[in-house]
Length: 339
Image 1 (cartoon, rainbow, N blue to C red):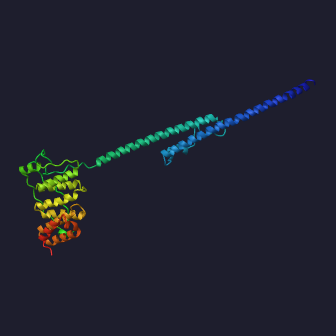
Image 2 (cartoon, rainbow, N blue to C red):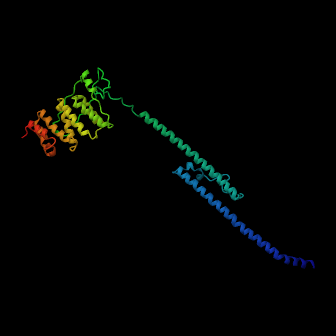
């Protein structure tokens, strides 16, 4: 009877100490739980962000989202990363985190391997396509046979004894019916030039001023000036083929017609004069070509067309008719005897 009151008094005396211990334990539990929860939440956010980046990488590498490349989406996860089934012991957050990281690394490895495989296939296909295109490409055409050509300087080699015929140049056809569709007869075989003629052509030196187009035209002009008309014609055609938009193109067409006219081939000359006038009526030598066309018609005894050309010249080029070309205009008008 006496021990019971003493034990009760001991418990009463120990009561405040016990209450204080319980309060401290509750405080520690309350404080530790949020810290652990906050740490787990931060890891969960980072893990979700990493998973989202992997899914974005999947969509970039495989835009179609083919299930062939996403087996983890088609079948439930198995192994350590699978969600615990009822009745199974729950895993710790660290174990679950490591399992999910392993799954992400495996998925990333698989994506890298598939990307490299696709890149390798693309390289193989491109190589096969390039090989097929090279096999289908036609062989390069052999250079055209060149016959007798004028020399470009004294060191040029004379043409061989049996020189083939020169490559025919495209002849300009009349743009309208002014010439009645007249065409020059087919040219016969070209005679082999004499040694004296070859020496004369070789004596004419081609200029080297740095302007290739200007040099080609000037060389043709020098050949015409030296009365080597066939050589000048070939050189001027070469210039027009390579430099059709050169500032000397109007000069070259007009001079080419004059070379034929001086050689006694008015039918060959007329298309060049007509083309030079009708192609660009404001060209540097368009007025000259129209006047030479009238002169060519006079030599072909076609005074009707000669008078038409003279009338058009007087109407279109009044300044030239009263100035630079006045003498030639008056003489040609006198020969045509236009009413």
